[in-house]
Length: 386
Image (tube, rainbow, N blue to C red; front, side, top):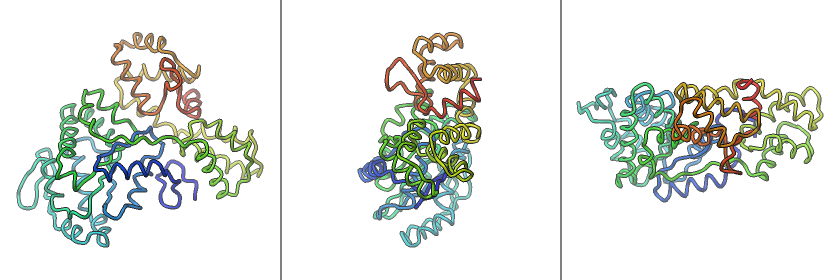
């Protein structure tokens, strides 16, 4: 197993997430449509690729990243193109030859703001056109359409079109999911690096996703994380002790694969030059990792692009405070909200967004918030707060 940092992990390099995969397949087999719930970097995209690489026999999975779509037309173009492109249809030959041949025969002339135009001259709205596309899907094979960065797409449409277009897309998907005949042929799986719940809550659209079966992707438990580190060390020919491994996990604390892999990568660089691993090497590896802006910059940029100016300044001040003091209480949050002219509801929504998107939590005390990751807290304190 290679130590893959910051990229999708597949096949032999994928660290088994047994329980999450079982939860996903249970929900899919029950006929549910899924929402993968987890902050960025926890491994949602790798889980979807595991489904893609090793599907159960009666399913045809397809993965689509819609992050760059900033309009309804662009979103649906990505969906239709993914289903009809040569790479996908060719991969079906051994699994569903008739379906592959049928998809190759589909002729789509254009996808525009008016809708989808087929080769026969029919122009249909996106939802109706999509139902037409899959209506002849053979009954013994069900499509799993995994849409990554769907929440980012909704946010893009809000920014570059308007709220009504975002609502239209959300409503269309809900109507598709509520169509019994359609749901016998297609399962949707939604995921992304920002929380769909927080995005739709801001526009009062939570009811359009409340039918989704939420699958939580959690950090590794301590025993899993220990096995993961030991496996990485063994593959990289790094000799460690239980004491050092435990110290490493204590410093990372929020045990998601990304942070473990990142620090192990830095340990390997140090170990290559001086093959000795102790707690001081772990500390140095963490300090070195904090100098790499590429791994952390998105945590700040996502806030800048996803929030209005006053909301961003409020969120930034909250995170600055936690990065300095390790925590913030509800009273300080309320005072900061008043300072930035945010009402109580707006401030609450912003704090919930920070929770949904994996920055902070109040798990230990409902009135006290802290960073999920000590690593991110240190980076924020070094590069943003000061």
